[in-house]
Image (cartoon, rainbow, N blue to C red; front, top):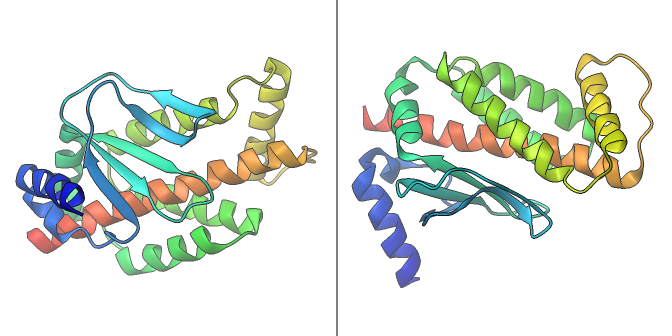
Length: 202
């Protein structure tokens, strides 16, 4: 408990608005030491970002597998600065909770798409941040798979998004797609928490 308290104290001191982060029961926070994993599902699925001493790890609690999102200090500050322009917080919060709980991959996909549309309110930089993050995640999940199989999984994801075409995947690859959609919801929930914390602090 002392270590957790110390970590939160460091984060709150660096980012005072994070004292109001509303999802502390869903995300554990710690200051990251370089080199650090950007996202980690388990020992088999990991991806790395450049080392940076000003990095915060957010570990989602309760996902089927461990999910850690690392955010640079300037990214955190930037989201805090644009938070006042973000709308529809209650609506997206309810949808994210539903999407995170469901085992229905199609419902999870639909809400992940809604989450992406909501994230686009965070203009300019958010699109590149989320795109980079999601690309790293799918690459991590597909790590070690033959190229043809990896391409097939990505094509299946694209078909699920466009809702066109026939999808035929193994149970293992279906789980990868499910995890990918789940991560998108976890990411959106984290951003929502930062936005809410920033709004409370305004």
